[in-house]
Image (tube, rainbow, N blue to C red; front, side, top):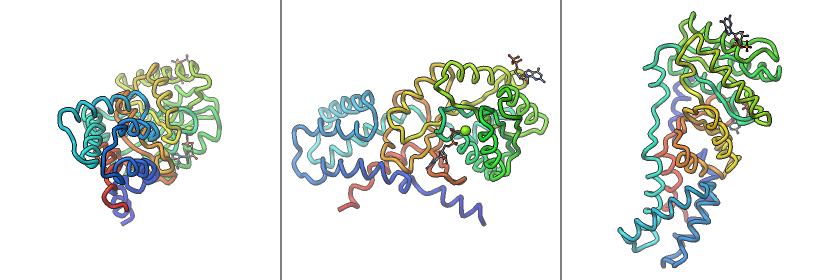
Length: 320
Ligand code: GDP
Ligand code: GDP
Ligand code: MG
């Protein structure tokens, strides 16, 4: 019963979670398009301001507007509604190439265990996301194990242990300041002998010591390969949506050092900066796999670009 109810909840669209982003984007877009019957000549300039204010980013905004102008020359438009539809199509086009393979499929089609390393700067939500993801995947029938490779603070291990207990997934840990690579080694060894489907490895995120952090991450990877040569199968970068443009910088820094397979965007429910999704997908071509929509264990949703954009644009006819 409990699972059924939760399952239903997670099937809802992003409507509620994107409320803030949608409202800020839409109050502006309404002013630009829908309250006017005539199209003003400087509408593209206004559109530029609007896209930038939704945190889509300069490069992607320019690209959208250039493509939009080309489309307008070819297809023309009569009403503000036509222009609005053209804009939506241009944004949708950015997502077409980056179709994401569902994580469950990847897990099923790989040899066990499938190893996922969670990376990101401090406070973005790595540990919380591990708890949520463990719960999510366990509900889908996978057998998991978690490794506490953020050994920098004692509290980090305790926090992860609380999440592991909530998700009812075993945790491999050592003491504070233990070698993170050694914890990962123990975790993979245990996963292999206990025939687990999935391993989730938490890591520290002290970016102020960037070189140190990146060395730590590559050492963890190197040591894991001694047990499972293809591991980590997936490196998930966790980003906090509310940091807006700062999230772009974080993707750049991490991609310089490690191969990021997918992104989890957290705290999307509390921010009007959800447009950052569009810029990140466009500029880095890295799929967004999940979004974090709150602090509870079930607050993780699979990301669907089409639904996301629909949600951005859909309210136009319902609002007065
Ligand atoms: P870490 O340092 O990357 O491991 O980050 P934590 O997992 O410790 O999370 C930092 C803070 O962000 C905690 O207070 C979490 O409850 C909060 N948090 C994580 N994900 C979300 C989310 O999707 N929404 C909200 N509102 N808060 C989140
Ligand atoms: P080092 O700290 O520079 O020596 O890094 P290593 O690459 O040797 O490995 C780091 C940690 O991973 C070690 O302290 C061990 O805990 C663990 N480890 C790595 N390789 C092995 C191994 O072959 N056997 C065992 N038991 N542990 C290993
Ligand atoms: Mg943490």
